[in-house]
Amino acid sequence: MSIPYLSYTPALLEPTILHRNLERENLAWELVQKNAALNRCLHPITIQSLAKLMQSMNSYYSNLIEGHITKLKDIERSLAGDYFTDPKKRDLQLEAVAYIEVQILVDQKMDQKINHQSPTSSEFLCWIHQEFYQRLPQSLAVVMGDSQNEAVNPGNFRNLQVSIGDHIPPPPETLITFMSYFDQVYGNLHLSQIERVLASAAAHHRFLWIHPFLDGNGRVARIFSHAYLRSAGIDNQLWSISRGLARQVEKYRELLAIADQQRHNDYDGRGNLSLSGLTKFTQFFLHTCIDQIDFISSRLQLDKLLDRIELWTAIEIKAGKIKSGSFLLLKAALLEGSIPRGKAALITGREERQARTILKSLLDRGVLESSTARGNLLIAFIADVVDDWLPGLM
Image 1 (cartoon, one colour):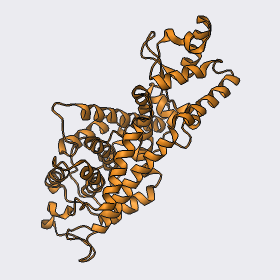
Image 2: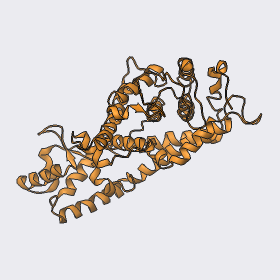
Image 3: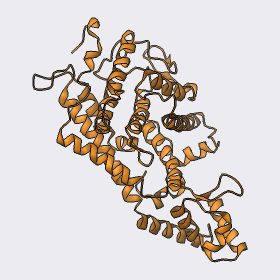
Image 4: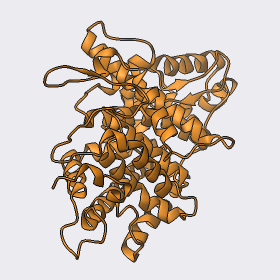
């Protein structure tokens, strides 16, 4: 159903917050509790090492939803400054790196205790869009039109009317008003943690319903959801909502479209949009988050993770890629977070020269890393070991 232009007011977003009920509260509590348990499963330093891999995973899966495919190994190469000469492949690498860099900036901003911006504010959302698009190559910063291509203006709301499937978002002249209302509703500081977790799903959809930018709304929405959950006390650095959405991308799009629909009848809420549609999307979104926490938790069970690393180590030793005694160093780094170089001989039970050889083989293989030539050693979750250490992640 088309909406008269003069009727485009923020009331069209309603319902925006679902009423609490036992089923939804239980889902939110399950997410909170399982996420907290996940973040206690490894040493904090090891968690930070694994978080680097998850940043690449977020980038891979979020861009995959948009139909842009860059292999995890190619993302890793690009982070090291190694780019393809083929322009199309290189541009996709640059896009992946842009996404990762923006994630890092968002996390840094969310960690700030002073001058902290709400992730729901127009300033914050425009900043995400600007940081992402100013890093993209020109070929990926345009929207292909029927008659001409339109350049995306980084950090600015669209100035054109668009349609997304059957959905026609608000006219550009109304976007400031709609986004102000979005901030008012979802940035409400009086919402409890459970209410904010529940609101994270609704906010994800309502942002996409407004569609404030000419392009990039999907990527911004998924980065926003990451930030919004962090603002609710969900330290989600070890799991990827983008992975969960990408693995059910058709259902994700279908439920977004269902939540776009207007109220069907008097039994479908009292707002403009379908209450049942928003409820279905909220349940899907929360179940997806919980499923991703469950998945990564199963891969990080310490005894099973160590068994997989030990098996990988034995295969690598047999292939001559690393040296005998390597597993003891990897195990120590995983459990202790970091190990001094000088402890390599003690940990492996080898002479100093042999221990240095073992250590060098692991550094060369990339599974141990250090910020300096003499710094402590950390375990590194690189793309080349993902299938063996964390099977099913890709």
